[in-house]
Length: 484
Image 1 (spheres, rainbow, N blue to C red):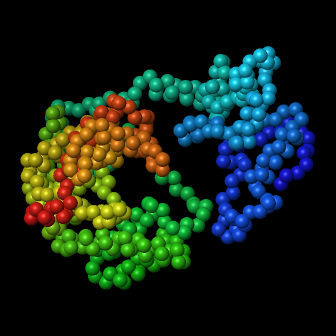
Image 2 (tube, rainbow, N blue to C red; image 1 turned 180 degrees about the vertical axis):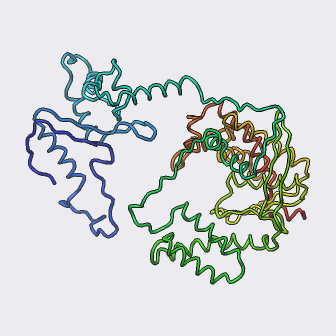
Image 3 (cartoon, helix red, strand yellow; image 1 turned 90 degrees about the vertical axis):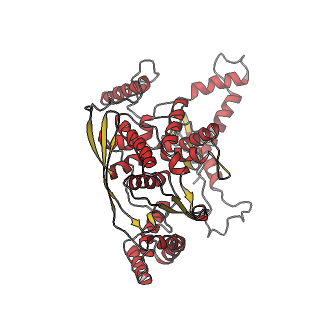
């Protein structure tokens, strides 16, 4: 609350960032004074402005004001509070340093601001604190090793790109590769390289207790609920009873909001999942045994033997589905299974079903493919897998899919390098309300920014890896209209 000025030799105001001070209090729905202000009503922002004035008048000798000048995420410059900006502007217009009286207002004001404002590193182990050319030095010896290590790491990053020595392989070596490893590699090759070869894992899932009680599920929680719902809804026997049991189980485990909020959330997810389940049930009516895979693929120096099982086989073909949109990894996973089955001599189709918020149920099909054609595509993917263990591949799934989709014009394949590169850059870098794929912890360790060289490599791999899985798939309407 504003009060009369109490004099102090030194007054310190900390955290004076824009948006933090003056405080912005969001209106409450139950506040009847919202939108009905009258002269004389209390204003929190006006109170804060008066408090700032009181603090200035209380300082007898020194007034110290600080704010966070750069973002801790991307080091972008942040602005101070509007009150601090107004104070600096007032000083620039009305005061100057000794000897600058003859200068114009803008020049003298800039020199005055430079003498008043000082930028300090945010952390005590910053190398700038121990630089002899820096104005203010630190004498805290305990931070010196960390500062030296930071300097060395920065020098290594700027002097040389990420590099790995290739794996030393014997001529004619035979590599046994499980199908699950091949699938995991193509979800994100650079992550597989870090996890498998370097044994490095950047755990991004920081689990913690929520501070607020949720009244609705977030995107990931809603997807998990719909995924579990699909397993219930595609079972035709005693569906109503199983659905009631599933709902009770979700509530007991705390996966649904309490009371009526949970009822509404569950009902909306059931309605969305029901359409997808109705499209899946006819395709999964007659289940077949899984197909055993044992394929040897000779490469230049080594040979790779693929071993494992392809499951979810039905009379209608392979069936793959998810409760969200079709991602690049979904296209590629279904494509790899389709190639494996075709090379093994099983001439069958592969169905991909997903749910898009705009289009509703999406059903795409890979038609029957000859064994020779499938082997060519599979050999290319396996060869890139071996290369991806020697050095990181610049294949980024969602960035590649954005580039491939850019080559479609009104549903027709119409290649355009300019459009493709533009869409890939936008997906990699990100933008307003969208996180770029380049911010992934594994990707950013190798490629810190988008460049022309990276763009060309990523475009080349997008064509090699994802063009066929996307262009070879046809919509169910188109497939059945051709009488296939």
